[in-house]
Image 1 (spheres, rainbow, N blue to C red):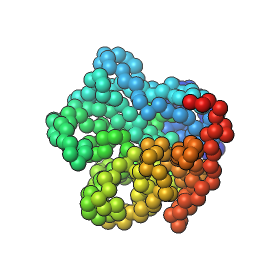
Image 2 (image 1 turned 90 degrees about the vertical axis):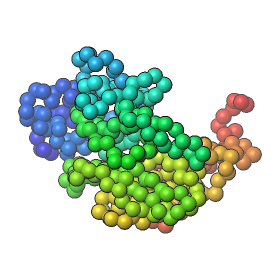
Image 3 (image 1 turned 135 degrees about the vertical axis):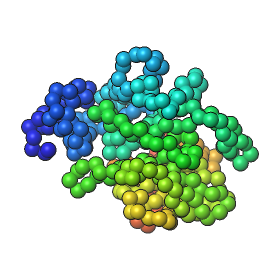
Image 4 (image 1 turned 180 degrees about the horizontal axis):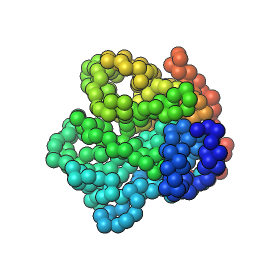
Length: 327
């Protein structure tokens, strides 16, 4: 595919045009849908990145003729918008819950240009514990889809055999082969058993197209795990609780039948600012950003040496030095 003249032309076109050109000919459709072209387009065409709104717009009219999935691309740093028509991508086994007050569709995660999104569907009521002292009645579940925003292609993921994380914090990883072809993907929900040393990784693998439950360890004892983020880094899956640290699965595609995760604690921090923290992968590093109060507000950036599990403070900035507003 690399030396095909059409490919060189297509990689320079806007994503909206590429979606239309899939219908020009079978040859063009084959080129555009080739995973190697998709990777080349995402990483080789300006801009090579986009910001997406986590909330996906929903078309609620069952009779409308709009496509099932649509992207309104905007140049960074503007936010691109996603929209879906659940009546077009659904089937007779799913009744979508579009009631007001419930975010009906969300972007859960992304990997190598693919997006993991969910749409709320109605289910038979069941009870679920959302805190140690509170049990709530659940009437909806998350129907998952893996979407390629460049080609407008999507695939529906089977419903998990057990309830998965309802806060949209799912691990999503893809694996790209040596030739640049995207070979497979995995969806992961980490479910620790509090006050124990055991947990479960509920995983969906594209190569088997099945969910499985893999025994894993839990290293935080009585701490109630508050997973807020999930990232991939150099082939590792990082599950983040911003109040304490990271639980890492080193080889998600390694075929392990019993997983020993490692725990990476955060630097010593002030408990007063537990909600003013962010961990992300940027510039080839795992980085931790904290807003701290030490006489004055400070912005601190820490960088992780993953091999030894240690953090280094690389930047520290006092708000008073850059912000003149007394409020």
